[in-house]
Image 1 (cartoon, one colour):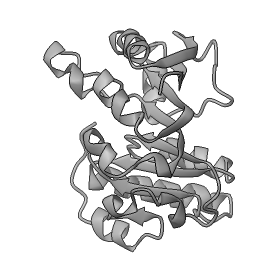
Image 2 (cartoon, rainbow, N blue to C red; image 1 turned 180 degrees about the horizontal axis):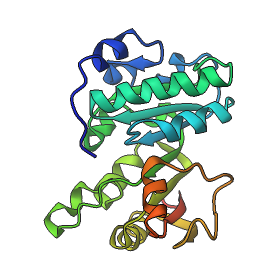
Image 3 (tube, rainbow, N blue to C red; image 1 turned 90 degrees about the vertical axis):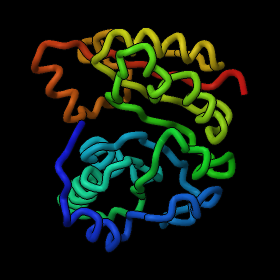
Image 4 (tube, rainbow, N blue to C red; image 1 turned 90 degrees about the horizontal axis):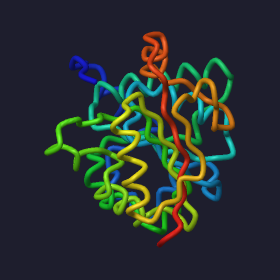
Length: 222
């Protein structure tokens, strides 16, 4: 999703208590950024405007969350959405950290010491042209990188509107030693999640009559 430059975004991020501008310095020690460092840690890749992670994290205070995006304007909106969601529930956002980084280079900021138990990937760019498939966040090249920091039995929760990306992702996961243990081609008729938190894209696609594909996978070969 393209978004206009927002001059307020970076100054606000730098002032935020739950944003880090130095993710490479946190490698192996992310847990120390949280109020409760011993809580399990989950990760969202491509958090966009942050509605999903704001709702998820504020409902699960016993889990720590890292949310990554590459665009300051997006992260600025995510920061505001997180603040609003937590304020409405009268709680502090002390179980969430957002940061700016290129997901293709993610091994530079996370390793096994970070003990990431679950990754969320929601409606990532499907990169439909064959020569661009390696840019997909679920491509085998990326999945191998995630295995460098996921825990044993670490999970991936994935949602998309794109049929080709969905079926390709099933193959990518199989090729890299993940087991897809739940899947659906119509999430809203067959919810496979404990609670399905709709993203902004998900609501738009659903209103257009597009069925949401989803899966849950875990590492079986490390």
